[in-house]
Amino acid sequence: MSTSLSMERGVAGPTAPSGTPRLGIFLIAAAAVAIELVVSGRYGYVRDELYFLSAGHHLAFGYVDQPPLTPLIARIGSALTGNTLVGLRLVPALGIAVLVTATAAMSRILGAGRRGQLLAALAAATCAEYLAGMHELTTTMPDFVFWAITLLLVTRLLASRDPRWWLAIGGCVGVAMEAKWNIAFLAVSLIAGFVLTPRARSLLASRYLVIGCAIAVVIAVPDVIWQASNGWPNLDVFRVLQTQAGHNRATYWPAQVLFTGLALTPIWISGLIWCLRDERARAYRPAAIACAIAIAAQFVLGGKPYYSGGAYSFLLAAGCVPLERWLARRRPLADRIKPVALVTAAMIVSGAIMAPIAMPLLPARVLHTMPLQKINYDLAESIAWPKQVAMIAREYHALPVAERGRTTILAGNYGEAGAVDRYGPCLGLPQGYSGANNFWLWGPPPATAINAIAVNFDPALLRKYFSHVRLVATFWNGLAVSDDEQGTQIFVATGLKAPWSRIWPAFRDYA
Image (cartoon, rainbow, N blue to C red; front, side, top):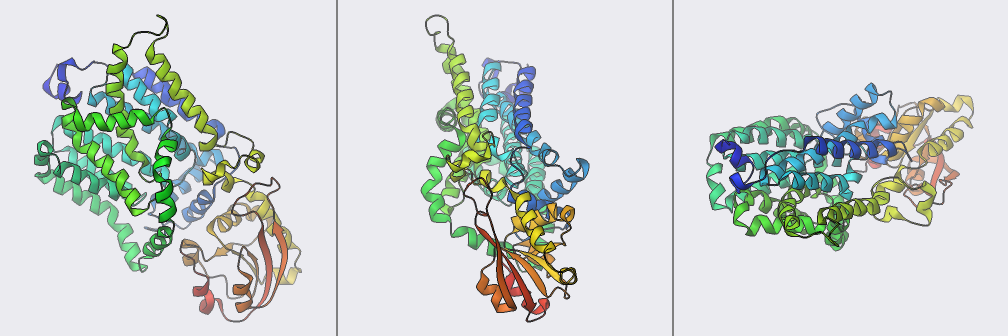
């Protein structure tokens, strides 16, 4: 066995079990992808997906509330798959395969044998927040994937002590910055992890780290330039998100247990402890420290509980190393049931329990009596969009023909505006406009549009800028499911009092 290969398998060196169960890992990954695809067509688009579909038709180097990668994926995915919901969710489904294989690969480098690698793969496949994050095309999907890939590359750097890995790490962080700015927390935490670990500190004194940082900056700079040229709108979004900080902190630690799963929590905790205390894991301590810092930082800053979810790919991988060794010392129960079978069953059961919360497995009507959307907000935000747009179309076509040409569609949030963009053309609706996030930059409505069908607006705002405002409909999803659209009011507003170019700033809503 070569020295480099021995180091890559972990500090345990030649005593580390050899081999990679490629077929087993592939089957676990394939099963996870299949589960995602089977349920990908249930319910409907989540509001963020509708927004990204619209953003994909306005490609740019940046957007008010996220970098450009996710809208680009939405544009390509919808074009290649006929603008179908299942097609849009193909890339996210493949993302869980990346998480499974990356977690298994990290466990192998850390010293896990075949059984440990399979357990690591299964842990990623049954992790509740991975199942939820890989179900839909939002910025969470590439964020989790790039966190896992970055941690895998860092693990290889620590195993080989070859500083050239900094180049790949820099490239990965740069691309991740084009998906979600959240990767910056991991990058800073990794530097802190290296600084706090004497054995790894020397790896920071490398020109390859400098070059890697330069690569990351070059890839990320177009979005930064876009933000700067548009007055840093992301700061307004951050300020709004910060209003939820108190609630996020109150639910943060219980969510870390719930979102990973009851069976997986002891594994990732033991992985962190093993890396921090076991001499055989000392080489990988910087990555463990970085994961701990990233998770704690989101709590301190009041970030949403899933923001640090990508860190669990490494911690689960690490936890499966001592778990495998512990299982090897245990005797079968009743001389027949192997302990590894019990652990495997516990992972699967844990994933199965959380699956109805992570994905739309249950009929949508069930959300009325079992409000699972209180845990996973997106469940209820993915129902009845076509019905809402049909109601808007009904009110639009009820107008006299002469008035329709002077009437625009105004939406209060980007989900409603995205739904009008997605379903409206088939119903004869004109383009939708909104003051929400990037929709505001794509506005205002045409100057000739002196009337509007307005969805989900404060009537006082409408009366300020229109001569006549009347309520014409109230939207109910028909399932008695509580969500942000239930009870939304639809108005017809006529007689615009001032040109759109003058009043459009009053409709801006960055959140």
